[in-house]
Image (tube, rainbow, N blue to C red; front, side):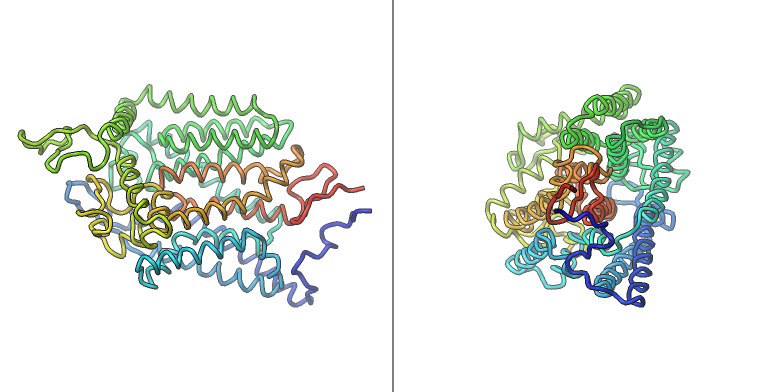
Amino acid sequence: MLSTQPRTELAAEGTVPRTDQTGRLGRWLGVALVALLGALLVWVLFETWIQVLLSTPVEDDKGNLLPDGPDWPKDVKNGLYFLILALTAIKIAVDRRWRDFRTPADIAVVVLGVVFVLAGLFGDSPVGLIGEAGWVYLRGVIVFYAWRAADPGRKSVRRVLTVVGVIVGLNALIAIWQTLAGPTSYQNLGWINMTWALINRAHALLDHPNHLGHLLALTMLGIFAYMASRTKVHWKWWAAFVALAIALSATQSRESTIGFVAGVVVICVLRRGKWAAAAITCTIVLGFAAAQLAVSPENRSELARRLAGVASAFNLPSGAESDDACVETRTDCADDREKIPEREVRVLYAQQGVELWLKRPVLGYGVGQFGGIVAYEHDPLWYQDTRFGPEGFRLYGSNEKQVDSFWLHLLVETGALGALAYLVWLFLLIAPIVRAVWRRGLAVHPFGWWAPAAMMFAILVACLAPSLEDPLFPAQLFTILGLAWVWWRRGTLVSSGLTVTPERTEERE
């Protein structure tokens, strides 16, 4: 006969009996971890705005005004990460739960770290640079382990998510206001760089429309996951969803819209249903996105420009242009220079990146040396490295800080081995959640649907953005994954008379 003991009476593997004193200390450490994780989730939503408010305007070589702000907001964020890491280690030691952290996913992230080190050593990256790059690549993992170590109760989680939800709602309202009021509304909030305001793409209190799009779309996937776990849904959830969909359309973050639709499909496949609700939600999102294009000439012209640029980049790939070629939309082109159409820089970067990878396919060129913020801070002229071509990596006048694709950045820096190790790790992170909810189909905790959808969203968005290593997105993603693992370990990820444990799924007699 299978055991029907409640979870509290079954010691998890790796957990040994604790004294009252260590038990009390462990509980307080858990409370502290949840508080710090909540503070981190809030801080990353305000960090860049605070920096801009404390900045002074400076003019770049193109005449654009950019903020020159202090570094202490970033130092606060890094300090929170280090403090969370330290408390996580202490909490695991006090609870004596180290064996809980020997799953295949835990082993995979260690292997991934080793591959990063090898890629750095073979690519002649200094030890310090390897450490900095590894930190940026994997700091979100700290959030994942902290939630698992904290093992919070539902009330604690609800408090944190409520606070974050209020801030998300505030950003959504500001985004709607920005798209209605125009550039003045951006200036009223203290923003200095008007690049996005001039093409009517809202970003609220975040520094980029795509960052806001990622935040809103992830939240909307969470709402849909909640609705998928209920037979009846209160109208307030639909109202919140519609408001967020309007705000998402204001960002015109196409990658976020695509990622949201893909995430909804994942939920419906695992749920084996809710296709009607999925059709409604996707129609709402796509409808508002189309309406935004219809009423905003700036958005229409920007989309047309980007689509034309994609076609031009395939017709005239990177390196096929002559040395004296000049983009026809520039105002400083001499009459005797060859005029070429404007091309989408992401495609040009990918074309160059694939050529570079084919030359060093296994371990790449070394972490911290190509197309990321660490490479830029280590050497602002990183793109002039002759390993990337006779004249270096061609930026085509775009941002020299990053290549706008996490997967391209990872592939060139760490080669096929690094990219494969990263994908295997992501697979092992989500596989136990997918297995658990797939066997049940019904009576699943919302995080059981939300986590796989968020993973699909993350993988797709990372094709067009450096999202998996930016300051904002990893904290959100690994909070969702970490909490899904918490419910899974407890056996409460699914119900309906069934008990799920990390090792297997068993039906109660």
